[in-house]
Image (tube, rainbow, N blue to C red; front, side, top):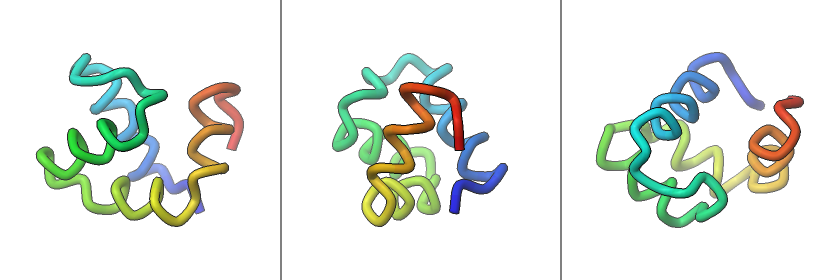
Length: 59
């Protein structure tokens, strides 16, 4: 489930400019470095939901 906490973590990684948000492995590395473990697991377990949110903004 895409929680507010995970959305905030996605936005933090995006706003940092650390990586292209389409590169999920790099997003996971950037999230891990920021201690955003929920986002790392969310991408691993819910890749389709992550893509839907990144591409459409819909949950």
